[in-house]
Length: 105
Image (cartoon, rainbow, N blue to C red; front, side, top):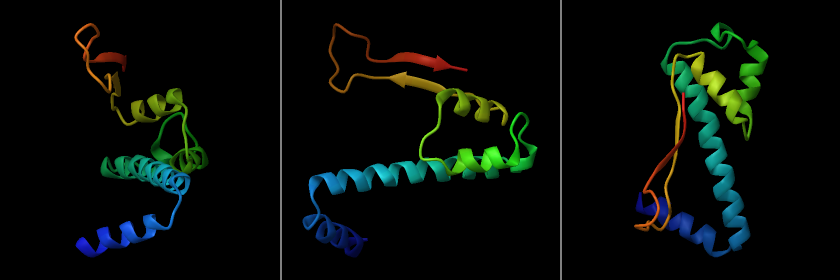
């Protein structure tokens, strides 16, 4: 693992901050895409079994770089899953809530 960390440090040392930020953003999007497909597969649900979606639309959703929140809710609902979105202040203060639930399906 140390070799991988050293290699990453070496690559980042020749990259601009903007390049590193773009690379990180791409990495995060790719992980999100993989998680949707893996989640569906963990539940042994085929793309063609998702009610309310065609197989090509599931393929597009799982391959997108971004997704509408309403589409994500519908996608997860078809697998009988709930979603929660909570917000927390980065710098907690006593005069504001430590956590606020925005969405719970």
